[in-house]
Image (cartoon, rainbow, N blue to C red; front, side, top):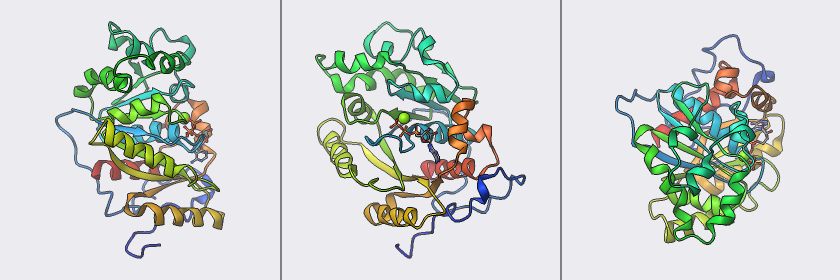
Amino acid sequence: MNPTRPEPQNRLDDPADEQTSDPGRNTHRTSPRAPEPSAVEVHGPARVIAVANQKGGVGKTTSTINLGAALAEYGRRVLLVDFDPQGALSVGLGVQPHQLEATVYNLLMERDTDPAEVLQDTGVENMDLLPSNIDLSAAEVQLVTEVGREQALGRSLKRFLPDYDVVLIDCQPSLGLLTINALACADAVLVPLACEFFSLRGVALLMDTIDKVRDRLNPDLDLLGVLATMYDTRTLHTREVHERVVEAFGDKVFDAVINRTIKFPETTVAGEPITQWAPTSYAADSYRMLAREVIAR
Ligand SMILES: Nc1ncnc2c1ncn2[C@@H]1O[C@H](COP(=O)(O)OP(=O)(O)OP(=O)(O)O)[C@@H](O)[C@H]1O
Ligand SMILES: [Mg+2]
């Protein structure tokens, strides 16, 4: 590992995944790359961040919810966009996708959709949601024949940008047209990578896709960073994979590392971000550290 890089701060001892009774316990977990952010007085226009990896189950949705909630705690106005027809982001925030009247699908496909009708409250101050459900899978098919099909999401999000500081787009696990739409309108991409066998497999294709989108559709697209997730403190293997990720991406790897803990599946059942469900937990603090790094980058 690069000796000038700080060791990931939150990976060595996650004391039995238990919620600590001492909320100050993790305050020493700072990084020079994650300073305490200053308050924002004027909001917007938003920076748009796509959370993408075509590999399934690496923590895209979990990271979107919890990074969003941590940014909101720091006073940022956050808009989460569920851009996966599975609707997991919506479910993770307690929204029942099949009961919705209007979703991101309507924003994409019907010009006269009232944005206010699609916006959902998340139960987190400063954070709103544009939900999705299975209807979105039809958009992928319908968009194929449209002019400017890669820019449909960008067109739909424009009107929201002045009201928010950060827009986080939770992508589906594919490099299809929906993900391309997210990359085409994003300022930056955040790539969650699980610290597991084969996690690096397919990443070259993702990076290649990002390069192509930059060349052809969105010259300003940046790689914001790579987030190591599912870090299992008990296995040497996890550490080895993490070291390989750092070798491959260097400074682009966030110092914040997300440990594997049962708390995340539990928050999905609760329909709440970890910062609210277990606010003093190690896991919540890891996402706060990520939020500080994202603000600083
Ligand atoms: N750090 C973690 N530790 C343990 N479980 C986790 C962690 N992060 C996410 N999970 C769980 O792993 C599963 C997959 O996570 P998540 O849905 O965030 O991944 P995803 O990349 O969005 O998946 P998909 O590709 O299907 O959209 C979920 O059940 C989630 O609760
Ligand atoms: Mg997901």
